[in-house]
Length: 452
Image (tube, rainbow, N blue to C red):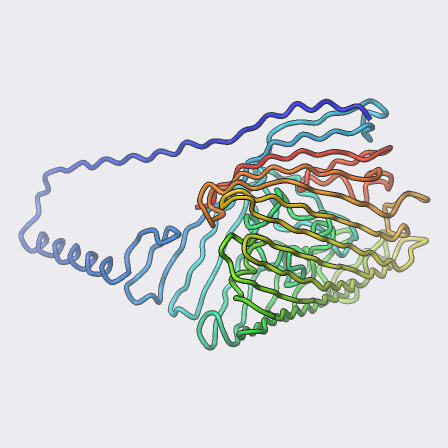
């Protein structure tokens, strides 16, 4: 295979702030002036008591009691991508190189608590990614093609019955399905590689609308609830879409056991130098049924996923500057409508590890294995149904032990042709893998990340 590599490294940011104050003469009587001074004194007292506005790791506005607080956060992930393939599905057998920049994420997050410290909320959206990634009900990734369009992701409230961080809680609104730890347990900006695994992209439940109950103790974290099903964010209750309508009902349950360490250690996928040993083991199951009460496409002859059973088991071990993560995922899809459809079973495996060479530089490697059912809709008869990927790369942390400013570079190698199946798996704009109809592909990704 002949490939040219022409890498453009873009890393840098300039941030400036300026302020000006203009004073003018005000015609105020003494009573009003005294009122203004009293108000100013009150605001100063709030600031001294912990209220008002400021930055304590995040920009915030709040009162002195702590019962009302608004945090304002943001994330920017800017990428350079270079993809090398032998055969494009659109150009034919010509060698193809696809390069360019991409604003992968431009997220705004508003969260905090209101009325009480126990009642928290979160509303966020992204200009770079829509609410849902992989489409578990349809058996293939939805793709994220609406870059630049602000899309609501999380919008929920959560009440802690025994105070934050422990005991029982209840959540309602739009939120992530508590399924794959790679997605549910970690924010978008806390991973090792430029993007989550292709296994996660294919099997993730994305965002949904529903209610969740949770319990956290020193060693156990449990979440379970009912929802409209995988990938049903930003939709009315009678929404119908080919392959993935609103479910009649969906139930999800996830259980994690912390064997050693602190829960906070597993809020990201890395482990900085100086960290204590930590270990976690978890699993989840999701079931949804479609088409019996909500609108169905079965009568039109269009294949509809009648039910989905998705399950996973995963674990992580972290130490002094090193980390390991592994996950096994599977799903069973039953279809109605269409012709010649049979039940399908798909599987995925992720193995990942990283180690710090210095206090601020980390290297990592990840294996992705997809073992899909060739009877799934969209697969070409006789096409390959197993896909293997290796990702290697590194992270440079500009702020030690923080994801606030980070440069990530990685290379993804596929070991077999990645587009022999009618587009059932690739292309995928989120990971940057585009598919090759005759051989594997190589993908270079460079990302500058800023979190504020």
